[in-house]
Image 1 (spheres, rainbow, N blue to C red):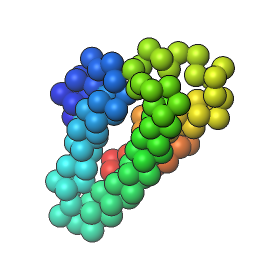
Image 2 (tube, one colour):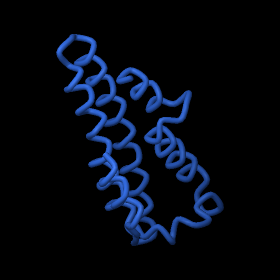
Image 3 (cartoon, rainbow, N blue to C red):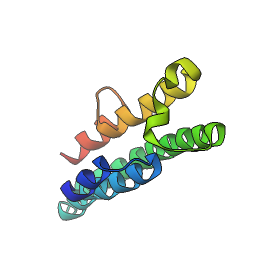
Length: 115
């Protein structure tokens, strides 16, 4: 979990950063597998995966849309996104904060079910 997130920090491409972050997020799924000797462990793993997949799809959709509009996915070009496209900025922020696990967003409840 730590290695994937540390590699994500060094990236300049949003797609690569999200891919390395996904490697780190798989650690949470492994926690569900380890605890999965009971039905609660498997249920919490599936709950987290459903929330994570929906959050990741939303984030990738925002990144792809930004890339189509600007021709790049470099992190530097996301500066001032709120002034250029407020809806895209809000959507991306909500998806990223949910991936982080900020309450009351879906990512928080997915991680809460694992722990």
